[in-house]
Length: 116
Image (cartoon, rainbow, N blue to C red; front, side, top):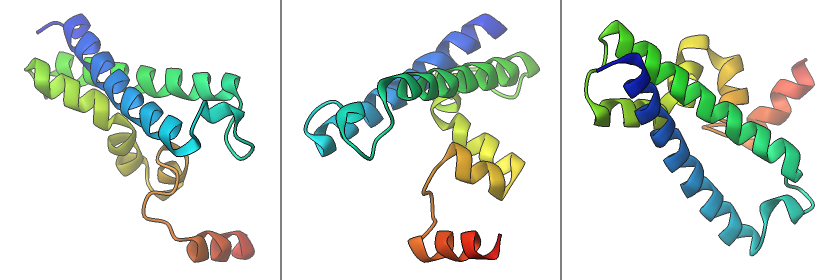
């Protein structure tokens, strides 16, 4: 598998995850998420989706080219899991940015803000 093929499968995986998250947000907000007061506006929403798709595309491409993954389904799943994979490699600061709210309670967030 070429790096371009891996990148396309990674992009497809990233987009699949974004579709699932978008549908969940639409249902939760009962409309467009960017129209709800406590949600990001349309521009930042689109940029965040674009960046996560680029992350999934790049990671799947790099792993495919290096031989770490060699099947389309592995590249697809790598694209879906890219934010979590990168957050795990970079540490706790990246986890807060790439996977907001993952495993963090409100009390933990308040404690960390008070300590800063």
